[in-house]
Image (tube, rainbow, N blue to C red; front, top):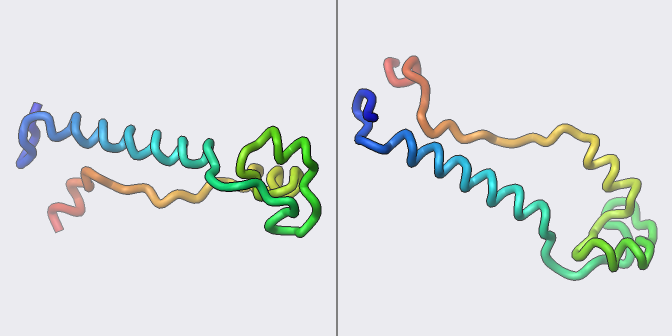
Length: 89
């Protein structure tokens, strides 16, 4: 299926690229890299040993992590297709 100036399969490639980007972003948030900190990076309170062992690479205490999780995530979306209006200008 081609539309306008797009070649066959271009829409499917865009969809697959968007899905791959989102999966990569989700995996990077799920698997923190590095060693766990002994004290919270935001408030400086000690992080309990049980939390450091349970969550690899933990950087925040439970209170700070809860606050961060409650905030809405801000993402800069990428408009791969563009709108027809922007192409007509």
